[in-house]
Image (cartoon, rainbow, N blue to C red; front, side, top):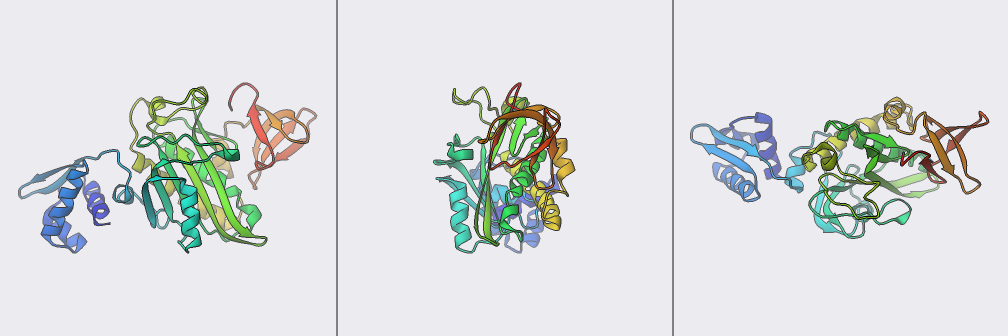
Length: 326
């Protein structure tokens, strides 16, 4: 991870950093630093070397890799055990395999391309290479299995806040779709291994449409990307680092109470369904009402036309906007 350390130091300096200082900070020789700098240049990083001044980072390519991601992380544990794969079947599948081998909480699996990525209800997740983010975070939460579903909403809040840091007006379609300009930019899939009273692990898979410029016809009307909405490319590794930082903070609040009371107000501020008419597709019978927010368990509160309030659980039903996607 020496490349990650060099990149982080160059970014933090904001200017020239001498070879001597790099050697001292890293505890390596000048020759080792020179080799690392050349490796970074070969990977596409713009690094200027000036006599008597040192090295300066001028530009970074839109790469995903252990070095690039690690150099941008500002977390204590989330993503610190990092696994990057250029192509994989599914980052969720990979994260579960790592969990079974004893990988620690915070293990982050990232890939440039998924061949068998899945969305909700087993739908295939369109995963082109080199433009989006596909990642899964491994957790080992000290909570009951019936509380694990709330973690999906914790990730939704973190992802929405990170997207908003890009200057985009992102919101959440309950429970976990991130939406910009009425179209979906992010989906989240949470899976768990547990016994009746104990969680072995939880994996939260997230796919964010970042720099994608084309969508298949069947989803073009409901999906978009951050690049299409902002009009410029987004640095994917930085966005990922921002999501991890936001998640770490929100997860800490969740663990304090084992519910969403600590993040409920923040989540509801971004909840696009709030105070809007919705149709609840319940197997017991569809009905319409107005979404009033969520409770501390993450259930959607729906006020029916007769004035009664229903607590809608995400695993049982679907909720659709009456006047559009949200």
